Length: 72
Image (cartoon, rainbow, N blue to C red; front, top):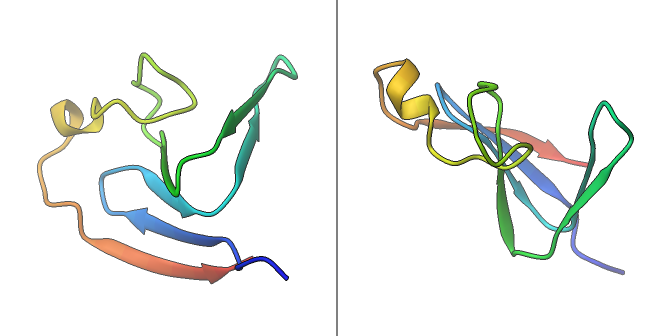
């Protein structure tokens, strides 16, 4: 059995996903990441959507404090 996928929301930052990631965008295009941890954009400003490019740092002040959501 594979490891569970874990999701952490970084305050004022991306969603960090540990495990396999497949994101389907509004056009139905599937984006696959094979990285051990993937940063998914939540602010909407990334030029690499659906992946985070750090643009959130320009939008809001504050540190990347993470909050664990749990396993899926």
